Image (cartoon, rainbow, N blue to C red; front, side, top):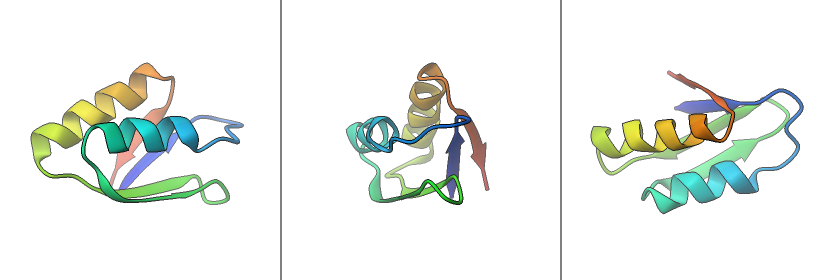
Length: 63
């Protein structure tokens, strides 16, 4: 599970588009719990997607 967080964020479009552009599937975003789940085609892709999300100002916590 991935958990990108940015305090006060009210929009899911940025995270969803970054994840999907990196080939993530099954993207589910909950603003209430501030959690995102997604499946990545490989570990390398997951690392690249996390980096891209961080560049947008989010904190990523993998669990």
